[in-house]
Amino acid sequence: MSTREQWIAFMTLMVKEIRRFTRIWQQTLLPPAITIALYFVIFGTLIGPRIGSMSGFTYMEFVVPGLIMLSVITNSFGNVVSSFFGSKFAGNIEELLVSPTPNYIILSGYVLGGVTRGLTVGFIVTLLSLFFTKLQIQHLGVTIAVVIMTSILFSLAGLINAVFAKNFDDISIIPTFVLTPLTYLGGVFYSVSLLPEFWQKVSLLNPVLYMVNAFRYGFLGVSDIDVRWAFLMLSSVITGLFLFAMHLLKNGKNLRS
Amino acid sequence: MPRLIVNFAGCSFTPLVGIEMNSDLPALSIKGLTKAYDNGFQALKGVDLDVMPGDFFALLGPNGAGKSTIIGIISSLVRKTTGSVAVFGHDIDKDFPRAKKDVGVVPQEFNFNQFEKVFDIVVTQAGYYGLPRKVAEQRAEKYLRRLGLWDKQDQRSRMLSGGMKRRLMIARALVHEPRLLILDEPTAGVDIELRRSLWDFLREINAQGTTIILTTHYLEEAESLCRRIAIIDQGLITQNTTTRELLAQLDKEVFVIDTREALTTCPQLEGYSTELIDSHSFEVVVVKGQSLNDLFAPLTAQGIHVSSLRNKANRLEELFLSLVSGRAEQEAPTQEAPVLKEGGQ
Image (cartoon, rainbow over all chains, first blue to last red; front, top):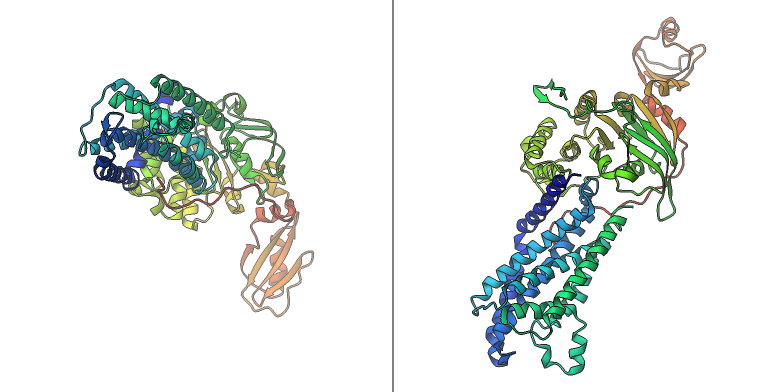
């Protein structure tokens, strides 16, 4: 395929992905908005004032970046794993596989679809947060870079999960037993400096901690970790996941018999 | 390069196919193709097959013979174990994307997104082949109109009838105007009227130069449409010849004769084997070299008048059954059934 043909194939796939999640917006955009709004009400407005300040900010100011990141992570992952596995299960992934579309275009199309959904939900949540607190952004570049890279990372992870999945249980195991614990224990709701020293060190093994803190640094200018480590970790993991996903597509794992 | 413009059914139709092909190269060339699935099932045991440009080719065989495996390998959904496959000279090991551009596949199972609109399914498929949006929309309209689906363009595909879904898959496979169209059981489960109209459509696109390979269980279909027939059995090609030559291998045919008069005993015809079916019909075996003409005089002499005469079974069907050994089916691995609910996340 020529470069132009590949671009057309990429845009076709990405538009199809965007059309999918906007068509079922009641399942893809509305629930995360409601869930996060409830978090704002309960943790920010009701419980937050009793907690006091966190890292020098009100609890509401502290928790907003974490909750935005929580929604970006879960929606980026969920979009790709659901769409790719659904196509695989129903058979219409064959439309792509029989075409001359290269694997990297297939991967990029699905990932960009996931990123679009993740960022869309993140934007909705950000708008909702304005009803509860004033947002300040100290480092706009860091904020944008971290949220995009995080979204790419979890979109890639979603695709890998979908490739390995053989039934619908397989696409709920990772979000339930891996993603949710890592996110909740990744400094979304608290600063790791509150933890005993041992658990602080254990927390450093959690990659989500780096993303949440780097994102919070972008908003508030404070972080539990060095932001440079966050970018190094994000770059490394994205590269690793991209290469692994390409390997799976090339070998047709669970896609070609 | 001049483009052939054909007009039929009031519809101007400009095929890309048939003009640019190099007739020296087979449309499909398969050499020593083998496939062993992970479960150990040997689906193909060394298939050699050439299909020339412009052919209308039938690939026949019992379930599990390897037909769908061959199609899967050509379309990249199945990985071959050994051997080579080339489409119009493009080896799939060396340049699969180029080979894929020349192939359109209509699979046996419905495999489009049941929640997408008919028009979007066809246009999206064109996009995967790198066709610009405007061209994709024009092609989608052309093929949806030609296949009688244009008025359904805005419907979700799950709302279509079985026959319409089958036609949608054909439109989708043609939207990039491949030079080789492969149809796996294209008329399975469709009514007679639709089957005939699909036959007419396939004849038309074949006449315009598209090479067609089809697998079918309706042997009448293969006999009616195809100029060449290959029979695959237990992973090996056992016959590959013209339809005429294949039928010439029939050493006997059984005819059913209906009579005007009631029969009490089976008519005796010298040199022919006969068997009474009921009071107004009997069957007669005509072996190679015998003539049907010779039946009528002795029947008339016995005071029996023939009201109608027909083949007991499709001729190709008789030959097929004699060529393919009866045995328990062995099936290649199949995928799980599709679900009909969109959602999840």
